[in-house]
Length: 109
Image (cartoon, rainbow, N blue to C red; front, top):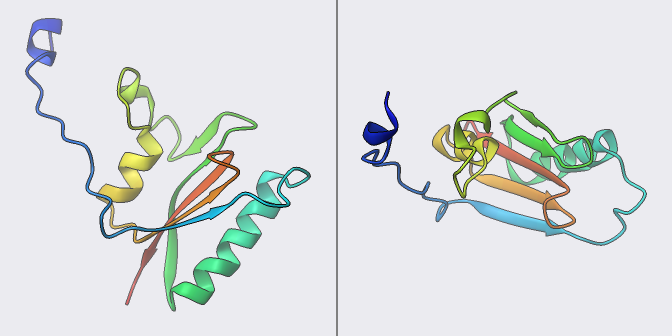
């Protein structure tokens, strides 16, 4: 695809209006990714009976899942892991320390 063709892409911002967002900003200074994921999974288990972790981001290591999801979003305002989570049915986002660790979950209810 040429640069000229890319200027006509109609990529819309994902609709996150159905997404419950939980911000956890306290007591995370000493937390690492594994601890954040365990806490996020516990919260997801309380909120959603049957759930699946769709995507996540670890800013400390600048690592995301699905891996390399943001490569095609290099100039986009929305990171790939966010786009992936929302477009694959996420209904819960858990955000630690304003984006330090972010987890998107889907319910199977």
